[in-house]
Image 1 (cartoon, one colour):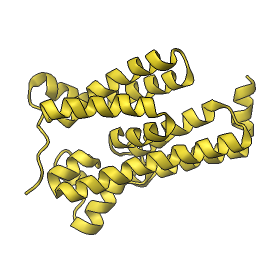
Image 2 (image 1 turned 180 degrees about the vertical axis):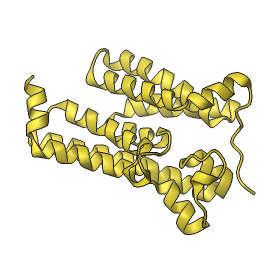
Image 3 (image 1 turned 120 degrees about the vertical axis):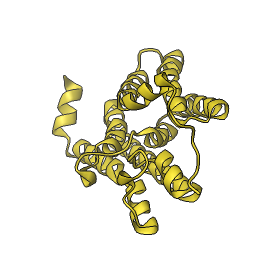
Image 4 (image 1 turned 90 degrees about the vertical axis):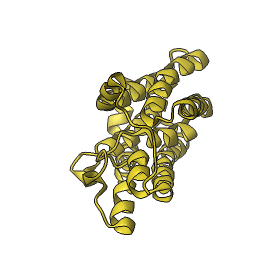
Length: 210
């Protein structure tokens, strides 16, 4: 109850949450495609604003740029949260909620009428700053599966399944574990169409646009 009071009564906590959501909401994939490539990424390929669709429709360089910026906004949101949580001695749940809101912002962007991407790259950015062990568990799993299968969605889904298991191994029932569980469950749900295609054997491997 004391933690909830701090969350709802602290103006700084509210500012952290709003900042995390707004940072996560910046649709870098949409902006890169619109400004530099001259098309609306939501109308081509899978319609997703993330790295995978950018690589397929715009090429490697725009795809890498999208990934870097999406990772960066997740990292920045968590960095800001951690800084002020330590400065003002706020409870850890503030950082945990800010981390989720950064990912939620990407998937439900206020700048795109509350639509967005699937949050994998932003999750990578969140984990990079939030906890290095969680980042490595997710990132290495994604990389290993992708090297073997070359399917981005499958790599993400397996990494999302491994993340809470690895986090529980290191931290048991802690705030870190609950964040990993919430993020994994949420992003897996957003991949429901990919899961259908994977089960049907029709999910495409990652190929660049010519």
